[in-house]
Length: 469
Image (cartoon, rainbow, N blue to C red; front, side, top):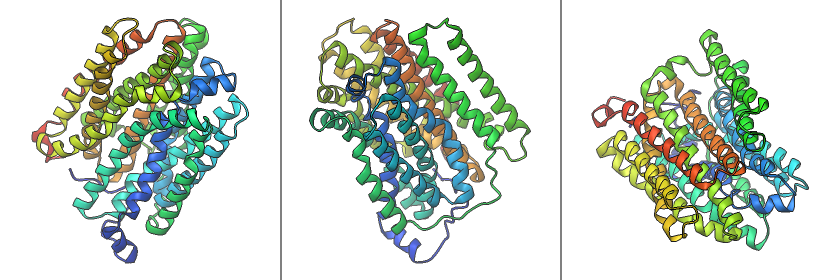
């Protein structure tokens, strides 16, 4: 699949010592992947730690949800801002600022004396993540201009999500059970420092595009929509779905989305032109990303709470119990990358979503108190299916983007995925708080996977279209 050049003008034909080093050195790839690894690791590593954090900091279930979701909602809400800043100020500069903010915020999380301080530090972490992710693909395009080398770099970048997701619960459980939950955040410090040093040493400065508008009104509506939706879902479990505050939050979130669409329609230089959303492959694949993140991360969160609260497992035991689900993600991402050249994207995405639906439906059908052995195959199917579909949906979004809007397309896809993660965790926690049980949560996730499969069948190009994208 041909990858579009970054919106900020990453120069593929650039020459010079830095470019020559990049072509023969893995250092730029290591630098970018280290930053991306931290971002994804912090999505999953916290899941097995939050019950312990909640006990030690006397946090309510809603507070526990905000420790998890505070990070993802800011991450999702500011991704488009991070992409626009990278195009305007230079992707390397914004990437490094994001790594620095993320590292300092991780230290603040580790030292937090209360749940409120921890939530605030997690919000700052999410802001750092939003600066890291949009520029990461642009930096790889810049560092590896040769198509073959660039494709390999993108493949390894994508596999970082699987590796981080696989390592998160197990590493989190190990740290919580040995040195304490604060080390879940302290581990980011050496990784962040190494990422900064490698980036400054081996990644060339990026071009700036001062004409790129930031469109602050549009950015504010995105943040408002994500925050209102997540807050309403978080509070639904405690207040009830018919509570006026919950209904008001959901209504205001819809209004924020409408305001964003109106702003983009009227703006001379929109952050996300509506013509991109009208593209069936791009818009459809973005919604598919939202749905499979909703189902997968909702499953990981609710299963973590169930294993520790109802089954009495320790944090380490919970990480080991979740390992079948997250370990499959790394294997599936590598396999799907190899198969996509021959099959196209549609079969991978559709089959992955159907497999994920089968996994969560199997969990829901296993009974109210199933033996752990009965959950291993459903977890493996869910993890494999989600990651198997990720490569194809990413390729679809980027392949449908015009070269001038590659950054906007990447930000759109990552934004919808993080919204899915945040809402999956929020809804899962609310269902548990309302006494609905794990089976209902898994059934909802299975329905999300089935919806994604149907949407992918209509929107993701078939093999015959791959060469045209």
